[in-house]
Length: 360
Image (cartoon, rainbow, N blue to C red; front, side, top):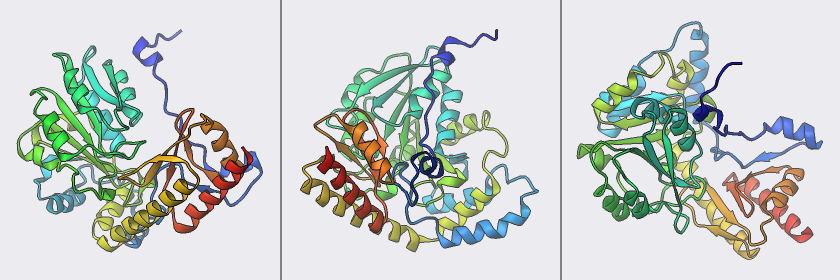
């Protein structure tokens, strides 16, 4: 029998949510709404949809392996040279590329819990050791994370805003933390939801890049740009870091439709403003309704809300909401995460939740 390395055998694979169609077949329902995956309910920019349609006739050709046009446009938008950018099949691939490039067996990577589940998976897959630090007040405990840095530490993952809690670490906290990180440690700043942030205390991660620090900033077109189905994200880092990561990046890793759609989406600032406005309105509505129900939650800087239940019956509530055609994400015995949707979707979630709570 084929021998599987122990560090691969013991990985717990990511379990995605079931497609809406499959759930509806299983439960015998129709007209479900999905508020489980932090997608933009507004959908893609019309400019992106037009670009995809126009590009479809050229699918017999391989995509641009260097994402030249998109890289050029994004470098101008960010005020950076193109050699500081790398693109991937979602920002997930950038995380994996970083682990494959910079981790050796036995190296340590520090990360929070709960946070994005991909961090421990890619670390373990590279033969590294996960150093897990529980959240403090539902936020990254940067002081504790800094205290655990050793000569074996090679990477530190910080999701800001954090998924699943929607919390951020401030400019001051981040500055203090970075002051304690030695050279030779790559700080991965995952900013998948940064376009949604309203707080003025949010740190400017590009500042650390300009200072020559070893940082890798992750961003994506999956969230506010509404292109989750096309899988395209990007990383920002020093040219030397990007150059090394490109050595392990597969050729043609970003498809041509994704490149064209992302390029067009960058130009549609009105669509981004509209998406952010819908999110802010939905956030305030859900805050109000959850408070009225006496349900605790964590104020968010992203497009989802982390709900905390005193009774420890998250699984039961999740299952009952499913039967009412409302799909959210269970996060533990007492925690749920709900994506902020369109107004009618938010209202339907609230009405379903009220009915479930009455029946408990």
